[in-house]
Image (cartoon, rainbow, N blue to C red; front, side):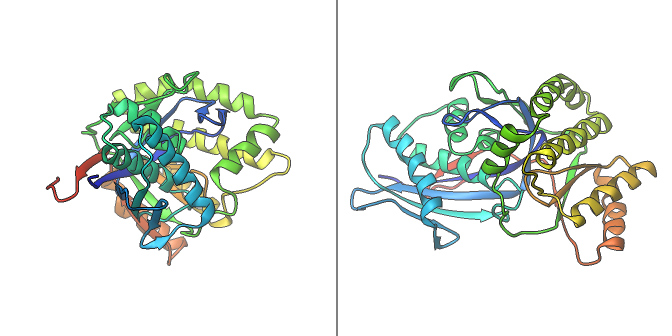
Length: 330
């Protein structure tokens, strides 16, 4: 069969996904809203080959560990069942983003895998179909099928829990400065972290209700190009998400002393008149929502307190692209 390659970009959730109402189908407890990022992405090539005796899977030229291979094989089984084939696949993936460090590498990884494997298996899926498919590998991957601002409706079943674009072409000034506190894998992965928060935080259900109530205000902020309101809601939602982890029993922490130093600096810059806001996923890295004109001021302030810190500018990015190997693509 023919090999296909897909490129999918990471996304940063402005309203967080942190908990599953259905573990198997990955149906979330909250509706989430994200921004797809141009600078971080995964490229994956898939070819189903009758000569293979098992699935061959590599990431950045290295074979995956057995537990990580199992997730990919389970996902490929979904493809095989849908395409009515039994053929094993060769999967080669390249991550242009630090893996498992709170930069949503699993989102771009499973979105790219969904696009490439579906095409390689001969499936003709709509973007919504691909979103549902990607969701079964990693919840946040459902959003990486689309570019720009994206909403993942929590839904109640496989059909209704799906992402859709809110604003694919972002024609107003907004960016994220990604401050890399660590590019090492997390001690507690996202799945384990959110499960612990759901089961052991006494305030988890309150967070769910508050988060879902913020969907319409966030939509309005996006529609009105209101950076200040968008940033304020995103920062509030992220801090409340991390608070669930801190008050769980046992408590656990993704944010480090350096993370908090950056968050405090963002708040100081805001008090001094800059429209800057912090958001954090399941990891120590801090993303600063800001206006592109303020980049130099923010970077200078960060380097004053953390001279060696790495900062990467991330801008609104595109949705999934899939092409047949050997064909030209944009």
